[in-house]
Length: 272
Image 1 (cartoon, helix red, strand yellow):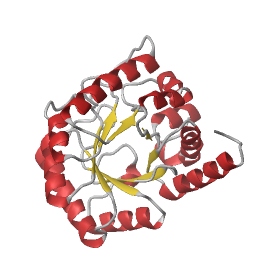
Image 2 (spheres, one colour; image 1 turned 30 degrees about the horizontal axis):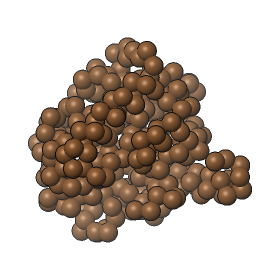
Image 3 (cartoon, helix red, strand yellow; image 1 turned 180 degrees about the horizontal axis):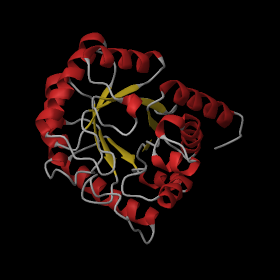
């Protein structure tokens, strides 16, 4: 994939409980309508999740997660066989099933391999690109229980460096980094990471940013996830200026416009 121009990853949540209510789709027609909209608006990748990981959530069972994913992936592969698909899961057995059964292209793991000790070996065996995200805390249920850092940038980089080394030793060649905005981080932690986003270039690995409609936006604005599209576009723009290669978003059209305008600004010398 040519990353000279950043890519937009559109979110499909096959869940009844994701934090942004307008992103939830459970019926066949709802899934088809959502995917069609994501593709029509210009997404490069489709990210499918079937287990909500919002703060404090009770995680769905592995069986239910797979059942939901199989419904969505069957519909997607039948109608849009060429669209690159990422699956958002922290479970190795789920990752293996969706890659083998539906040819899923990317595994997106919010836990950096911490919630399933078999994940790294499974991804290495499957030889699919892996999105390595930082999350502080054992799981999403407790990750926002007063997370503390002495130096958030240093600790996140140390965490990622250690896991990159392990993945490389196992033979995983295609890694994408995700700083994990909102996962075990207070507001000031999130904005410190965003301010220093360009420092992740030291890894020489593509970087994904997912801030879409998150609390780091709506808590600052005194609004809700449903009301913070404008704020999302502002932070997506800043992420692109900081070197993001992928934007994971609920609102594809607006993210695509951010990418286009930032590319124009770069050519004009208005940003690096």
